[in-house]
Amino acid sequence: MAGQLWDEGNLPSPLQELRDERLGTVRVLLKRDDLIHPEIVGNKWRKLRYLLPEVVASGATTMLTFGGAYSNHVRAVAVAGRRAGLRTIGVIRGDERPMNAVLAAAVADGMRLRYLDRVTYRRRDDPATLRALRRELGAFYLVPEGGTTVYAVRGCAEIVAEIATPFDIVLCAVGTGGTLAGLAAGLPAGRRAIGVSVLRGAHSLDNDVAELQRSALGERRGEWIVDHRFHHGGFARASPELDAFLVDFERRHRLVLDHVYVGKLMFALFAMVAAGEIPPGSVAVAVVTGPVSGAARSNRHSPDLMV
Ligand SMILES: *Cc1c(COP(=O)(O)O)cnc(C)c1O
Image (cartoon, rainbow, N blue to C red; front, side, top):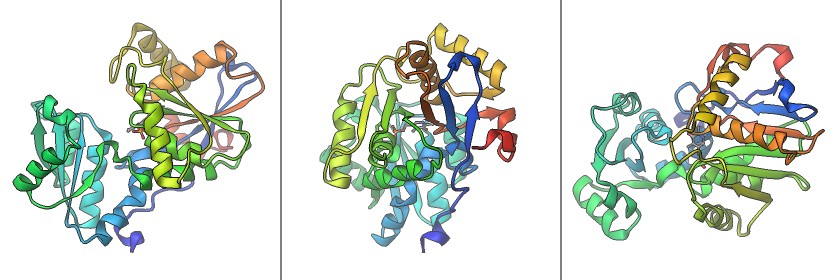
């Protein structure tokens, strides 16, 4: 059944070497999850893969989820719902109008939007808030913000299983922590995962990731940390250093990274290499969780980039 309602996408996602003299003897491999699916961005595809059959099996006809106005997750749920024949409702933080391209695409996929003021949004998981939403909008299957569920942990654990080349460290950007929880859960002994938080001072993430692993797997699993140094001012904020890094990165690699997630991850990776925190001679895998544009996209079948 999952095969029909779920588009299997391109698996395994390609692993590409990033050649950059600043890395010295550190080998960096990009795990191009952005190339899995044209409409459902990388890690959101992984996170929904095993959730969607659960939603259908529950008999629900509507999925409701939460997100910011530029949420890749909200957009992913709209696409997944359309494909599975489920109605979708996106509850959006704040009141951002006119509608941006992300939300317009979600609406084009049939999603109904409901804006929620920021104060109530913070209490989105409270029973009273959910009761009020059910009264207003009818019954729904609740998909948490970011799609972060025990099924996401299972889906993201498969990232590591797909990496055929031996590596020492795997890194990803962290929003809600679902991707890191899965990534770390799939790690073989002796490897470690570093999650780069894109939020300012979100120290509760450490506990969130551990809790998520406990509910999905019964225990904390894998050697992992959340690094809180590279938020550049907070979610969707940028610093002059980040901007300069990304302009330079585009010039060197013809890859346009987003400022929100993958750009901050890559900045962090280069900083860690420069500081010797990722020791010379190691192999580091950076998970490209979301959209990248640029010439290398068309190189996915080019043998010199594949490893
Ligand atoms: C949502 C998102 C993340 C954050 O993933 P979490 O599992 O919430 O930590 C990272 N990268 C991209 C591109 C995303 O869209």
